[in-house]
Every structure is written in structure tokens, then in C-alpha cells.
Length: 263
Image (cartoon, rainbow, N blue to C red; front, top):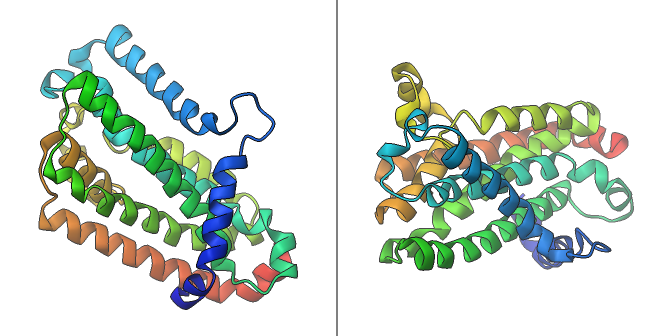
């Protein structure tokens, strides 16, 4: 699979950029919707969780930083992972015509969706960091140089899962709907919008088993604590990334012949 991705790296890169640029073609805001969509969600959460819901209920007294900064440090990576999985799940069915006409491996179309999500994350983080620095006094620090590590591993983790999901979706079209539901629930299974002290003891103990935990926790460790993630977080990210890619490639290989006929 790695050889296939390397051989087709130029096609993946070009089409991923084109997807980001033309996703909202014809609309007045155009490419700016890539920024406006997450921004609107951030504003809604910020207003609700700072002006409507009591701060103590959310455990915000334990934050010690501005809530929008805490929110963005978790929400932006989560939105990128969600986009990677949701678009990756549809990658083969939406590219069925190309899949039949071109001699391209299935993984190329999934990689295009993952790279598109990664570009979106880079854009949103590139806007967030200067604002967090200028408006809220966050950083910058040397630790920020390590930020691409967890971000890239997060996207590769999503790519691995998407390989399996895309193959299954080509055969069972309910898969995309199920992925949407799981992602909606998953947003609340990690303390993205609330502080972890809000969790009951049993939930906080099992939090480390959440697949998204090491990635989001590493990004927050870098941004909010100005520290490098510990060895446990790096091992967790590598383990989940390798496992997802192994499972994804195995499922895709097992279903390849059926996928080509059904996509």
C-alpha cells in the first residue's frame, strides 16, 4: 500500500488541494467556508459554555486559560478527524467512475480525502495559533515545533480507519450514516468542550482507552502546557496509528474484488 501511495503521490496531492479549493465552488464565500464552518461552531460553543451554562458545571475553574483557547485546542483536531473519517468513508463510492476507468489503487482515493482533511487542519491551526497568541497570550514556545507530529499521526490514524470504512461502505451503504452517529457521540466521549474534572471517576479512568485520547491530549499538552507529550502518549499514538492502518489495509484487501464491483 505504501508503494501505491508513493507512486501516486502527485495525483493525491493535486486532487486533495483541488478538493479544498473547489469544495464550495459557486458559493459567495468560496474557499473561506473551510474556515467559516469550524469558526461558527467554535463561536456557538464559546457563547453557550461561557454565557449560558455555569462555568463551575463544566469544570472551567480548573482550566486557568481562556475557554475559547481550550475549546479550539481540542475541537479543531477533532473536526479534522471527523472530516477524514466521514469523507474517507464515502471516498470509493463517490469516485466509483474513476475507480472503474483508471488503474488506480483504492487507497489513493481514501488518501485524497485524508490529505484534504489534513490541509483543512493546517489552515485552521494556522489561523488559531496567531489569534491565541495575540488575543489570549498563549505561547509561542519551542514545544509548538512538535505540533505537526501528533497532527500528522492523527490524520494517518483516520486514514487507516477510513480504508476499512470505505471498503465496507461500498458493500453496506448504511455505514456512512453509522459513522456520522458515532462521530456525534464521540465528540462527548473526550473532554473537548468541557474539562476532564467534570467526568466521574470511572469515566476518567477509562478515558485513556479512547482511541482519540493520545492524539488530542498530545496536541493540548503542546499548546496549553508548553510541554512535549510524554513517552506514553507517543506510544499510544503510534500504536493506534499502526493498528488502524493494519486493520484498514487488511479489510480493503479482503473486500477488494467486491468493492470494485459494488462501488
